Length: 264
Image 1: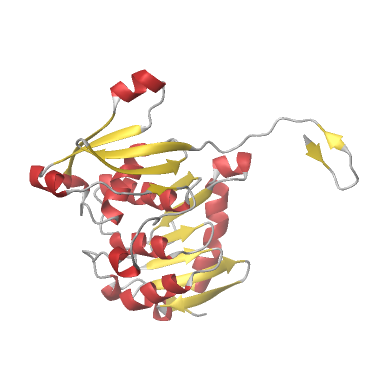
Image 2: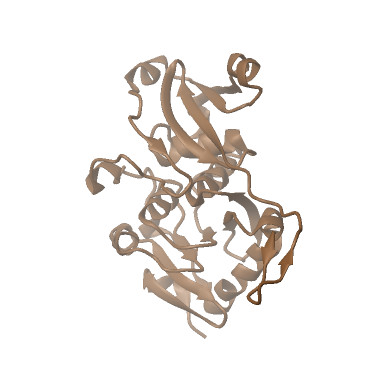
């Protein structure tokens, strides 16, 4: 039912975003549960394992499968079981004692220091340089590729671009952190890590966890159409990453790594 300001009522159908839980298991160990939009689940899991520092590359993942027993019971494919190439690494993993909603990428983390997983990549040394005009053109490219958002209006997006502004991968999800993991997982399975001289664009705000994920993938420039958080700015500056916020219209704010932006 659609209600106008004057009280007029229109009955119509509407598309809404799908949200379902996904449990990630390493062998028999339940690692995490996240709320996500179904689709690209293996990319999501691969990206999660990389951005959480559990593996450094997709080559350390021997196999992934949807658990058939759980699907037989519920009719849903909502559990991914991962086998790592190193049996000892599997034994060393302990279950996560938290449940992630679609709006929170780091619920249950004990402290900021606990999430500062050391990245295998040095983004500070990345030679990427981009023009302001190129950056300002990216949100329109991202929006035009958001097919699900155009129907529902309820999904976040992460878009990966090369140094020339070519869109390489876009993923949508109810969780902004999931969208990032799906993009990074895609890159990992295509053996593209580290994402040297690449740009990742968030359709919303730039949070600490998104900055962390970009860092873990070796991405030197994170841009967002909305605001960054103070911790996102702090981590970007600390890591030598370029962080751009309010990338919309004819201007943007550069919060860290301004030396990568060519001003014209």
